Amino acid sequence: MKKRILATFLSAVTLISCSSALAADYSDVNQSAWYASYVNKISELNAFSGYEDGTFRPDNQITQEEFIKTVVCLICGELNESNAPTVKNTWNSKWSSWAVPYLDKAFELGLITEQDTMFKLVGIPCNRGEMAKVITRAVEYLKEDSVADTSTYITKLKDYNRIKEEYKPYVLQAYAKGILSGYDDGTFRDDGLLTRAEASSVLVRLIDKKERVNSDETLYDYFGRKVTWTEPLRTDVPEQYQVSISDHEVISQASYDRAMANGGSISKYELNRSKAMMFEDLVLQSIKYDGDTITLTVPDYLPESQRWVVGIVYWDNDKDYDLSNRKKISITEPGKYSYSGINLLYNIGIEVKPKESDSFTSYVEVTCHKPLSLERLDKPEVSFNNMHTNFEWVQGQGYKDYTKDYQFEENDIELNW
Image 1 (cartoon, rainbow, N blue to C red):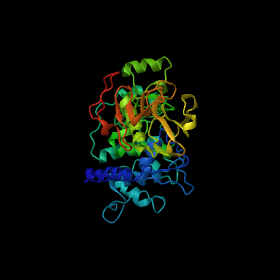
Image 2 (image 1 turned 180 degrees about the horizontal axis):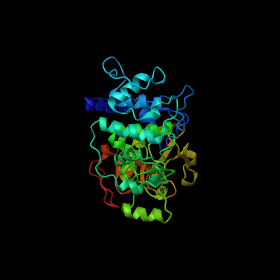
Image 3 (image 1 turned 45 degrees about the vertical axis):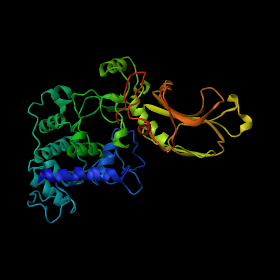
Image 4 (image 1 turned 180 degrees about the vertical axis):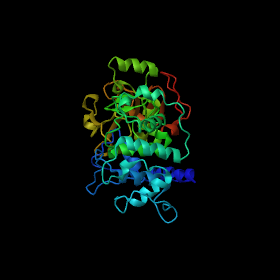
């Protein structure tokens, strides 16, 4: 029964995600913030809601009542006649009437016991130690096996000796499960007050094992947030377009580690060519040209470490038909574009570059002329990267429409989508 309930919630995440590009469109949640993906997912589950002014207020503290209700709802659903609590707390609690049933249910599920007297207090923020206790008990309720040896985390937690004894076993277990990751300085801060952002990350990891942190993995600084080697740098894009640090062109993880130790930056590394081409291919398929007007769409799919340039070179009349008189349009922001008066098209270039480099990762070109020549082609052609293999351009077609076997001669990488 417990597994079926949890599976239902995970299915809900999937279904809602498919119908909503970004459920949590809060004005105060930057999509590059470390907590953004967690806020989005927890909002899609309706576990947390935003405020009437369109904000989420990630730094606001969450009360014990709010936290308990959310945990109860996530692991056994909203309370109704079929799953109403069968026990009553014996504290004569002064919790608000809306919260008392969830307190009773928490007792029934074993999330709270008679010894957890901190929860007698009303309307106070939940501290991180109590959060760890409740989360670990929720994991036990869901019948997950405990981690037998958590001793390795004692040395990893820099403030372990300052954590209250009653919290220590729960904190260690939650770390071992990958539900907790602590702060950048290696501390947990059990007496710290739980924020809505922190609660979002913990609750998502509770119900979705794929979101849990492998504490043995190295964390890398990515534009102000910590990510693992394989963690998606953006989760607000379709899965096939998601990119991790491992999708950047480096020799190996070890070489990347050495580069970082010597002051390197992820923004200097080219994106894996096949990943870059998937982005370029979307732009290519969107291009329409009727002899006067070009329309195209540039999606916002690339990670922060990468940039793109879409260039259009043309003449607006045949009087200026000279290479020195070509006009140029440069597109560097996502959006839908339409340009008229393009009487004679020279070429359209789509390229992806590292943020801090001019060396392009990948390049797709639609051209109507022979290279550096005024001699026009009978039909426009499209080429991919090496400029040696050209195909007749068919508007609306993508890379796979031209060939399924094409390989890059530079580095013998075959695209397998």
